[in-house]
Image 1 (cartoon, helix red, strand yellow):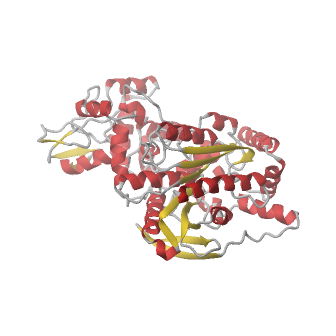
Image 2 (cartoon, helix red, strand yellow; image 1 turned 60 degrees about the vertical axis):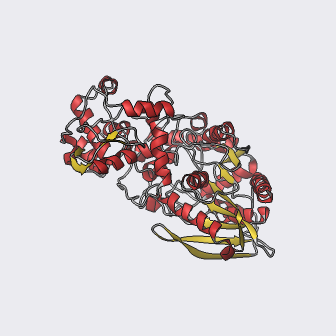
Image 3 (cartoon, helix red, strand yellow; image 1 turned 45 degrees about the vertical axis):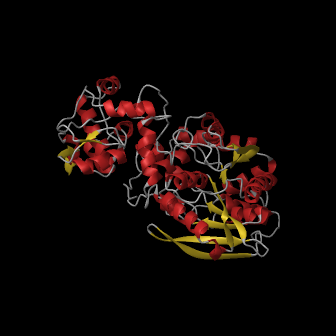
Length: 524
């Protein structure tokens, strides 16, 4: 499931990764919609076989964008061997599900299922495949407003304009289809098993001795490949934190966590109910600065317990209260459920600092992996929703786009503990549709609007990590937008190394590097 962002100055469609847009012709409109550039009125229209009034369709356009199969788009899909009937059916599914045409057709190709079954898999009725859409312009365009807007928007026109609207509005419906991954991802063939074994050995060879000991301990815990498991099974598997404890036990050392002055669990009111948080307070009197922290796990697995060591280390090193957020996870609650919970927690801490012995004007965000994505997105959401802005963003090997074909992906395709099959597994379960995979909330490195109004960033990357390249691209993009960025790639360590400070010296160094950036921001 590759949500690689293409950059094309000539077309909004390439930026979206779609073949085009359905232009649904309506009667002459009475008013110009300022948000989309499309002409809108209040007449009923058909969308994917469902009747809705034009005002509802207007909102639908903002949310999912129009799909327009122009002649160029038709030629593209015909050249790939798809019949006009298949293209039309896939377009119907895309329109109703909010997925991209490319994603729908990839499901057809990968699964070999009929279109009707792919429709059900994506959460829409099978009957939508053969629905007629009055006014659909196959080979024609109704793009005047879109083109005008595209030329006026930086970095992708319709994409940025449409999804900035999404950033400004909380999303409450995060339910999505819970289907098993396609066989090409789930089934490990002998060839894939051999490649995975080679990748693991390569990770061990490249890792420094301390990191290698952790990886060997993880292998000794006999966790099966992530992409062969269900989310429920994956949540029960051993983690890097367990491997660190195994190494400590082998050395005859204590496995007790790094001490902090106090740790307490509480909840914060969230958009779908209470959001559990864990509050780590360092020694001293306060009020302290704070770090609102988001754990990793690909938006699907792991908990605040899994990443306990990172929070303790940051609380002590930065002399700050750390509030670790237990956001909702996919596939039960697909993205952006995690973002909405995280944003609610951040704003609550900033507006109610006294409850945490915190100075609400000195609050930063931090996260690892998927949590690094959340931390960066909290700044985008705060700007879009006129919320309080964090003073710093600490992004530790963040998920910065859905591209799984960057240099570090190829270099670390089968690395441990995280390789490309694992990344694709996470994206399959977490991302609701192909279009959302191109939104700024996922595609930080390509679609996120950046500028000097975002806080300074510290970015920590690992050499043996498929996410390294997108972290580098994100750092460059932020710098180009005028954001003050400190970033460092640590050699000889892997994804998830940041919380291994009990046994890996480079993790301690990375925590100190992160804390220096946080403390500098807290002093301003």
